[in-house]
Length: 248
Ligand code: PEP
Image (cartoon, rainbow, N blue to C red):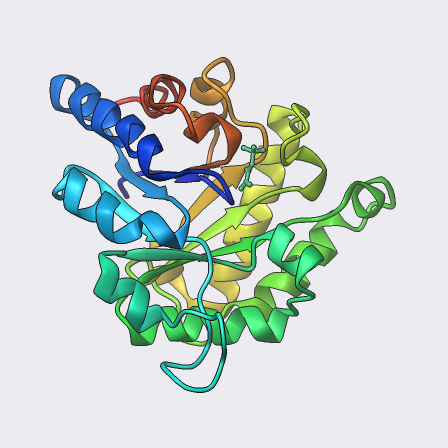
């Protein structure tokens, strides 16, 4: 299983910021990565980004609508994102769940839409700090997995991103033991539901991954890559994080 390091630019990036992708492309050409690399810029930049990186690494989206087309003003379908050059889409990010009220059922609909369009669905789950303090993190994450991941998930069409809400953009990360324990729990849930084939589904860690902690986190058991927010905006930092994946 080749790890995946994915960058989520969130609502950041104008045309001029595509220069970061040119810098990343040049850096990766001189230092081939030991993992798959994906950058998810805002939707406005997907087509330009895909044209610019010319397959040196993948370009993805940050959200999609569950339907292929229709009267949904302002929304974008998975088919449109694919047409623009995306090969993956993040669904169920905690910021979508929090600020747009997305439910697990909404997320499952979006993941199914991603598959329908031939995109890799990166399905995000994660507990809040109150839930962790209450000792319910495992229960919350397995509930989100059950209800957000549609039937038919495979290593080819799906990656899971475990992103504790309290670690996103805060500079705080769980301990190595907490990350390893949660990833083992997620793996067990996936295998119980989808069988041994689910061992091929990559489980990414997300939440304050930086050049300083990337190698340590990416080396933990069952960590199949990272979903990186703030530190993916600068090519230098993101390249350093990619370098944290050790060649197998
Ligand atoms: C994210 O938004 O998916 C994320 C992990 O953000 P950050 O790396 O900035 O914590």
